[in-house]
Length: 242
Image (cartoon, helix red, strand yellow):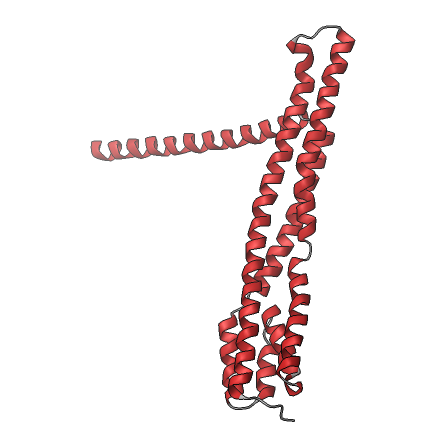
């Protein structure tokens, strides 16, 4: 009986410790959100709202580009292997069907090249280069908006800084005193808006660099696939069969 009570007591103590730790975590989380809310208001809700809007819009374009680029990044090795098997049999239509049924810019430029295979290797190469430029433009689409928001975020923060300094000087003029208490409010607005703008710019810059690296990887795959397709056409001396 004593052993049972001892175990029950230890279990109750462990449960109590867990509850206390959970309550502390919740309190810390609530205090963080509360502090963030307070700083947002102290930084002038007007300017901080603009910075927040820039962050939301920037992340929306980033999310759209991440989804698009991930869908565009296909297995080019598998695609070329299937096309090579079809061309080895002299079946151009099967090769075109494989390219047509595969998503992404790599498959698109491959399909455009196969469509003009009856016009000679030079025409195929020009077609691939031209359509590759179109697909490259689609990959870069909306990235200019992300760069715009990266530039706007710190600019809005610095604008808030200037406004905060003006508020501080207005206080000095009204009170006729340059004590820290008088200028603290305006200086706080200046510093908080600057910090907010820089944080937003840093967040968007990280995502922008990720998008650039993803896009460059796809462009490299497109170039490699284009060269491989031309090599396959020359290797198997493919001619169009109606």
